[in-house]
Structures are given as C-alpha cells and as structure tokens.
Image (tube, rainbow, N blue to C red; front, side, top):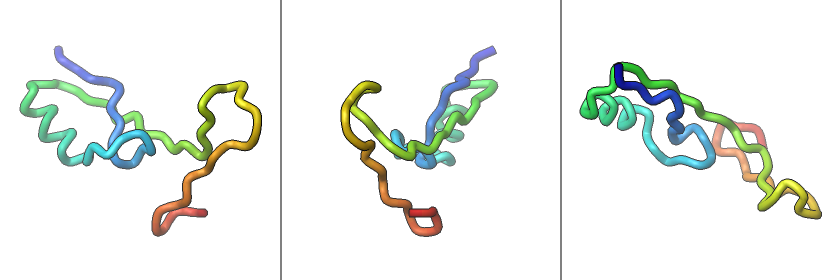
Length: 65
C-alpha cells in the first residue's frame, strides 16, 4: 500500500497546494491513502527562544483578525 500521511494544503500557512490538486496528484502517483495535516499558525518566531513578541498573520476574509 502506498500512502502519504502528512500533506499540507492551502489551508495551512506554510503551503499553497490546492486540496483538489493534492487529490489529483495523489491519484496520478497511485497512492492508496492520504491524510491532510493542515494547521493554523497563529504566530511565528524564528527560534523558540527568540526575544520579543511573535509576529502574527492577519486573518483572511472570514477568519478572525
């Protein structure tokens, strides 16, 4: 069985891969299973011990600021 259990799509801040395209590519690659692992990054630091505040992204339309 061929599978990919860690796929991010345009719904994660670190990807712009359209979900429909992921599905199409998975079929083309002959994958039997995929798992979307999207997440929301509310703040970003360059390193865990970086001083100062986190940089927050502005919400997209329909998302909270």
